[in-house]
Structure formats: structure tokens, C-alpha cells
Image (cartoon, rainbow over all chains, first blue to last red; front, side, top):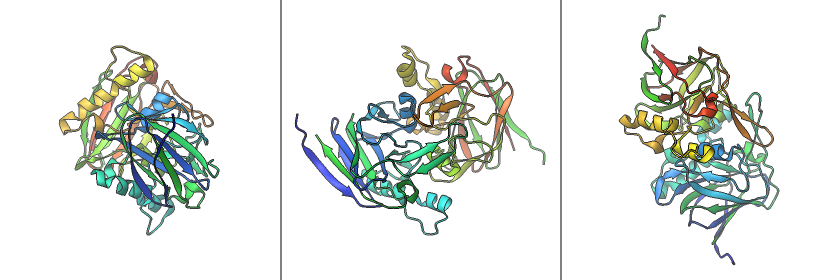
Length: 200
Length: 200
């Protein structure tokens, strides 16, 4: 069955987009230059109070780092997205999107960028959602090292090489937002774009 | 300065309670019999759409497992609770509360208990909050082992011995809910009570 490309585009460095997916649509997220992170959030298009849940997804996968065949579940334990292809194999689902507060607290920046949190909030604002509705994101290509003993975490450069991608199947009609990450630490201090393609 | 006990009580096995804390109040959570988990959620008493955030807290602590001096932050990056004393040192902040769906999916139970999720939802219902408002909980005494390489997680019996406690200081006026956990795997299959004390 040939797939039709519905939409494709480039997310400029330190920005974000909103996309609508129908059940069955395939979303491909590509790291065109390598070592870049893309924060993904998703809501049930028919009821925006259902959203992706890191806690449910990690619990049901019994794995902190999701990859092929793992499912991103909602807060109501319904499948939202299934990872059907993954050329990188390491993503994060524990940290909230980078934000002005994070840049202030962790990097002592005086005039911080609004970060992925600000970009995601702006992307979903037309849906009537606000900053409080932005959940822990699925941080595509983000490499967070965890020390098993101490629990210490360390944000390292992503393992993604130029052109690497991850592919999701929408398991329900979804409103999603996607960014090209604004945090230097997560992309080795080279702010880059992210590409996406939606096929049906 | 002598502290006054405002309220103390026992949470019966597989149940939950709601408590109100004023800024500065001290909450002590005690595991009276050992190896039991207590799920804690908290909301800003003045604006219930501000709630504890696992993602912010882990990011700002740079540690997956919070302990003494670590702060539980809100989704708006404000301090909600500071851990001021910790006799166990291992708690989880990645998994959602156990739920009927979890018992069905992971343990194939036909008539599952409503779990901590159901107990937390019932505890906060009088505040006008619903199941969708229950965030990833701070899972006191819960021991989740994480494999650094594969990300595989494994819920093990808590490290808490009879009488061990953890103590928090409220950093704002809070509405909280607290459970004695309903999941066998998290308490070594002996469903037990949890004790709490609030002092001012």
C-alpha cells in the first residue's frame, strides 16, 4: 500500500510546530544534521484532557528508554503512539521540556529563551491549551545517562547521526506539538533544525 | 521552637487520605511495618492547576532518586516540598500510581483493585479534581531499579525497615493526597498501612 505524504516540513532551530494526526497516520521525525533533540507532546484530538504519560509508558514498557514496538500511553492508559521504526534507540521520557526557568536555574541565564516549553505552549495555544497542560514530553533523540546506583543524571549529546529518524504510528486521532530543542546541553551546543513528515 | 502536632493518623492498607498543609508545615511519612510504599501528590492550595512535576524535580536535582535537601518542584518550577530528613534514601519519581488498568495490563487481573490512582482520585475529588488531574506521584519508599545500559526497570521491595520515615517541609500552602500502596510488587506482596504526622 503506497503511503501519501500529507505534510512535511522543517522546524527551525529553537522553535516548534503543531500538527494534527488521524489514527493510523505515520509521523517520521528526522534529525537532518545529527545530535539534535525534538520534544514531542500529544493530546487526544477528541478530548484534550487525555495526554501522553511518561509514568504509564515507562511502567507498561518496563523500560526507561522506549524504542521499537514500545507504546506511548496516555494518562488514561490508552495507546497514543507506537514506535514502529527507530534508527537511534535512545530517547528520554523523564525530563520536562527546557524552559526559561530551567535556563535561569541550571545555567544562570539572565534573559533566557522561552525554551521548548514556551514553543510547545505557543504551538498548542490555538487549541485552547496553556502552559499548565504541557506534560513531560517524549524527548526524541535526547540522551540522558542515568547512574543505576546514585540516580545521578547527565544530559549527553544525542546518539543521532545526520539523517537518522524515528517513526511513530498514531493509535488515535491526535493533536501533537513538536520542537527543535532550545537547550544547548541536549544538542551539544549547536542549535539545529528538525524535519518531519506525516504520511497516510 | 517546639512543634505542635496538627494531625496524625494511619492510612489503612490499599487506601488513601487527603491533607491540607500550610507553608512551613512538616509532614512526616512513616512506614510502620517496613517495605511499604506511599504515593504522594500535591497541588498549590491557591491554584490547583499547579501540581508536582517529576520532570522538573529530576531535572533540577540532576538526580533520578530524590533525597535530603532535594526539592519537589511544581509544573511551574516553584518549590512545593523540600525533603528535610530521609531514613531510607530510595524513592521513585518516574512511575504513575498503580491503577486498575495497570493491574489488568501487567498482572492480568480480571477484577482489579482501583489502586493508588483510584484512592488518590477519591481523596482529591472533594477539591473538584478528577482522575486526569492525578500526576506522576512521588512514590515514597518505592524502589525501582534502573539498568543504566538498557533502561530496563524492575520494581523491588522497598529498603524501608519498620518505623523508617521521611520528612518534608511544605514550601507553599498545599493540598496533598497520600496512600498506602495497593500494588503487591511494590511492597513485597504484603499490603500494609502507612502512618503520617503533620506538625507546625
